[in-house]
Image 1 (cartoon, helix red, strand yellow):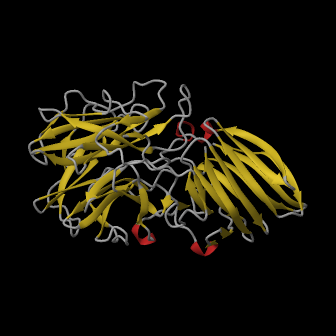
Image 2 (tube, helix red, strand yellow):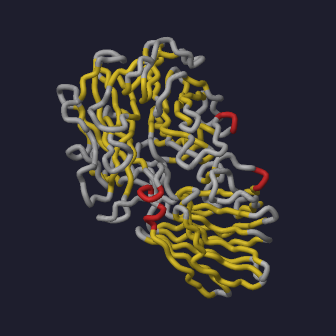
Amino acid sequence: MKYNNPIIKGFYPDPSICKANGTYYLVCSSFQYFPGVPIFESKDLINWTQIGHCLTRKSQIQLDNVNSSGGVFAPTIRYYNRRFYMTTTNDTTRQNFYLWTDDIYGEWSDPIYVDQGGIDPDLYFEDGKTFFMSNGTDDNGVGGIVQCEIDIETGRKLTPSRSVWQGSGGRYLESPHLYKINGRYYLLAAEGGTEYGHMVTYARGGSPSGPFEAYPQNPVLTNRNLGGYELQGVGHGDLIQDDKGNWWFFHLGFRQIGQWLTYHHLGREVFLTPVTFDEEGWFTAGLNGTTLTSFETDRISDMVIQQEKKIYTFENTDWNLDWCYLRHPATDNYRLEQSKVTMKGTEVTLDVPASPTFIGIRQIDFGATIVCDVSLTSGEAGITLYMDEHHHYDLAIRKEENGYKVIERLAIGDIRSIENIVDLGSANHATLVIRANHERYSFHTYVDGENIFLGSAQTKYLSSEVAGGFTGVIIGLYAYGDDSLAEFSNFKCEYV
């Protein structure tokens, strides 16, 4: 069959995967968004359904006043002795921790902390022992991939942290994962930074702690030399073996907005690349060490059909799965119903690293039309295309002394500019429309059945190359103002 990449579209970076009872489970980073660490499941490796989050309680994760792209980094999910474990980093507090659950569809435990620094932690289980790894510096000040043995019940270190591999020479050595395959131990990592130079490297050894011999042809996977190719930033991922014995690599990457336009705003997404072992036990990945927009493979049955959802509404999404908040929400400010949401605004704006009244869904493709009916009593309410507190485009209704207005506002770095205003008179409601393509967003409103164009803005100013950070555009609904009460209905995001 032929499958297309990305396998999971939109801002779902740093994938990690495990298999339990014939089903695959995958988790991704969530940074400042809550609930944290989304969980997906699949039977065929191609079609994925979100089933929950690992971090659903404030007691599990500190997100107050966390800057954009802070918070929850790079999780790892593992299944051992009929129990699921997820380990991750709160990069803002510089703490590595893990949770566990016996029910993947239920709640996870409170955090168990490990006294080892770095980011991108990994858990490896063997013969009753648990090895904990991260990138960083060991107890003797040596940098690299750092490992210790821990007590899985308490997180207590049983051995000193020791640097076991220093990588192949690329910058930002990170995302370690350890596997035992055919009697050898394989240590997977990423180097080059999660940008256009990103790459996957690995080494192998005879014990979980090495010494490790680097793959002679590192990097094993990278698109860094494919100038003008849509898929870039390939790296940071996890290996899995399917039920037929085939190996696969789930990893991040991103789609740039044009052949020669090196910007990406949809975030880092989940890609799937075939892996093949040779007779000497080394593995290769993809097509000559690169990943593609599509692969034709006989590893997956032709009976598998890759599904793609094109229309998202309040009615066909789940508030607890598809939607997210900025940091920990004040839940009393939200009334979530099947066909509408009512939100009470506060004095917290989109421009600060706090928790404004905001609920959002990831933008997952370039071409889209976003429509929502919005009404309000006072203050401001509308749709935001949100990258971070310094980079967002807003289309909103605002109450002023002389009546209601629709505004188009752009926030780019230190610049805040209201580009256009449409007078609604005494009408406190309007239909807001945003149309998106690879390079531009355009902003419209309907007044008395008439389509009024307010303006457009380039997508690249919401990209990681401009804004920095590690997230992607979220289509957010928001309300602002202490006395404001806003209602959102007839929401639809339709992808071309």
